[in-house]
Image 1 (cartoon, one colour):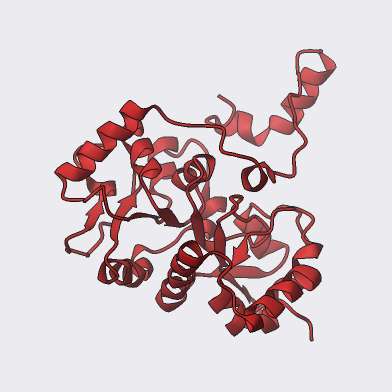
Image 2 (spheres, helix red, strand yellow):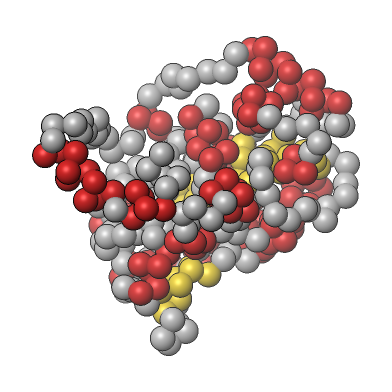
Length: 304
């Protein structure tokens, strides 16, 4: 009720204080560093009937469920726009959005490599231009429901794309996740086989790239795109289609071979952890950053 009401949402801090004074507010907060997803066995499973129904759907649309299936989710503002219907301004989330066309190069590489790809999303804005066997745009499917999508996610070898609802479900179900166009850079995927590719940061004033190391210890208001612009003078730059394709290639290599870093990459990874990631007070989880991105952009992570 609060989240869907513009008036209540804007004044929640004051309302919460009033409720606390009246003894009518109970805080069910929790304390977690969120390492459970990468250190403990999977604890949540979907019914076998749900998975069977979803696999039948995939078979009916030409996806071979006996071969690897990769999911892709590209976040835009269409879902919040239609669900909220203007009741609450969610434009502060827009910095997390991505553009579908930047993902089609990676999708085609996966198809060329013998894999199949399903584009996920219950409410999406843009239809994919890819018309190839082995690819299905579920976002524009005539048949869509939550149970069906849940079973599709469970059937994936891995998923890549924007961090949001479908990818959160994948993490919960133990499906490896490559977070591309990740923003903010402090908040990373949580699974033990996950990887991420952050958006670059650009100074609004100078137009120059802002090093990640200069803001990694600043966490106030990091989930509000307006705060990044107004307080820090920073805007987010989407990943290029080539960066996304290379990260997908990194992810496939990691899943096929596990711990696939060469000696040079291991040295750089150790430095990343010791000099950069240790300063992140928000997250204690350290998923692998796409090695191709770290190698080309090391100056954004290290001061010297």
